[in-house]
Amino acid sequence: MLLKGFGFSGYRSFGNELAKIAPLRQVNLIIGKNNIGKSNIINFLNEQYSYFVSKARNKTAMGRQKQEIPFKDIDKHISNEQIEHRIAFPLFANEIEDYVNEKLPDSRRYKGHRLLAKKLLRSNFLADNNGDVWFT
Image (cartoon, rainbow, N blue to C red; front, side, top):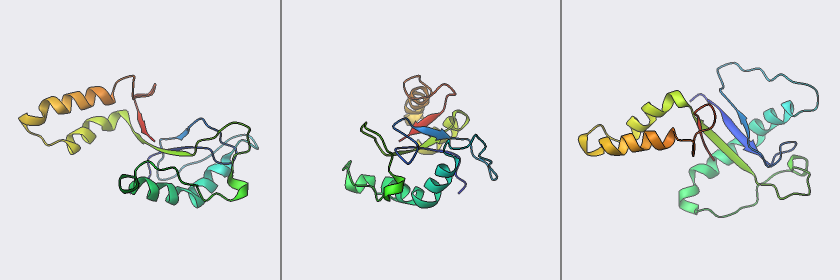
């Protein structure tokens, strides 16, 4: 499965604000000035991404327990503020229709549920300025 995008916070030079990196394609370039975190994005994907994904998949069995993330000292964000380590995945605006139809069966019984789900996912409450929904 191709990773379409991800977001993260609390890793190295990335503070509490969720850094969203999307959309991703088969080939991606990370371009920017020196010392702004390009290598930290690659390091996060290489060293931490699989850990966060496995924890997200097992979240239902474990509940919402806080656990220490196995960061090396170099990976910890240096700051005086309380930092939250998060990872997020997008549901892009153009995928909402297919996503809801996949999750809710195509029957008259669920027609109202599908309409409500689409409306909620497209609302300003959940969607960002691009209409994308980020699940953290």
